[in-house]
Image (tube, rainbow, N blue to C red):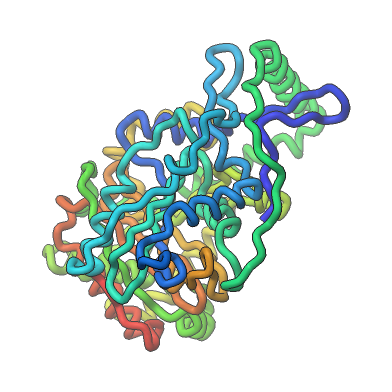
Length: 471
């Protein structure tokens, strides 16, 4: 992974460039002020022997030291947000002079008797806690005591620090491709001072002048300037054609009590199924999500033959040059999934056609400030989305942490607004790992959803030799 630069860098001889929050990141902070969690999390299951000391206890201090040795590969992990105030620009990333690794790498014993259900409940509780924004916005929780000597690890970031792709890259700085990897050498770290008011004001003015120059440049190139407007117009037409999402009993304002279930599939089998039907692995995931929703709605008496739900699918808009850039570079695709279609093969083919059509336009990116604010205030009553989905590509080979093999990795998402069910997929070492997050009160029958996903993956031939392990 490419190391992120610090919060203040010199360009040429005397020009200072500060790392500011993007408008999308600022909107994520606004969303959180409305009581909605904005976290990116992953659950990794590790072989535990290499993480224990001679008496058989978790070697927490050695683990902390190892992680701290690698933080020079991802300087953002030692940075916090600084809000300069009105007139001095957006919040800026600055070094945390009081950085303490023990604040970020912590432990909590897992219940061996409770199995996966107790582990996932602990992860939900830990991930629901707000971050202290006076310090870097990340945590690692080690949960020793799980069955078979495994040590689960919950890694959580605030969304302003990383989207899903950036979070995977950040994890790459902590994990190794081999159990006996050499420690990367880094210079001794010392916190740099917070930018002065004059530096902040100068940076804000330069950004304003740059924005004006770009606007003037666009006036001189009208065809190029109108291209984003044409795309936005076409997206608006497409959104109008999509129409409203159907009403369901799980599209109600979500609360703070959540539940997580896991489903495991075989990545190679999923690829074979996708290839045979001119689809992608993401289409297979959407087909399984539709199968879960179908089972849930059938059990509630809400299923009918022509029902199609609208799924908001997170889509990266990262250019190759910004692959290692922290923060958020993500849009959404709205994909209809025909839950009324009983045959998963026909359903997969219909989803593949729908996603191919929607990929002809760039993902929706509500970057304009007025659109962001409108979304925040209408999230509890929106009628465009029924379900949330995310699919992240992970490493194809097993990884190691401090010599311990990582057996499985799952992304753990959040639910918000009036969308009570979210499904995340993460490929890792031949597995297609799926997590289902839901409002525990609106979806007390979440096991029905997980079983519906499992049954459709099995019917598609994508379950392979890996069985579902839903809590």
